[in-house]
Image (spheres, rainbow, N blue to C red):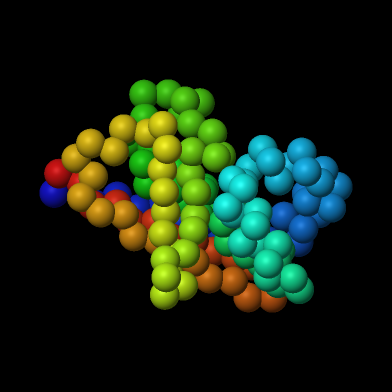
Length: 124
């Protein structure tokens, strides 16, 4: 068994400024439709949720990078965070070889200024 992990932390203000300055262009380049719909539903806390998902994508890239032949072969939208029926985050990966991946676990957190994500992958 092989265990790999990735962690990322980001300032929420940076994501807020990117969204306010670049608008739809930034949102549609980085986030999937499901992610945008979820974050926008959070009204006053939407930037915290966007930042946590941004950090999750970075953390996921770090955790899966050992399987990539070329780091430019993936895009932001190849990683998607959604929530299960109980509200726990789930990480979906698209266009990435997931053969031999046993499980993927993700944890997200945010406070007033920062959002953080941790991704752990267990593989054969």
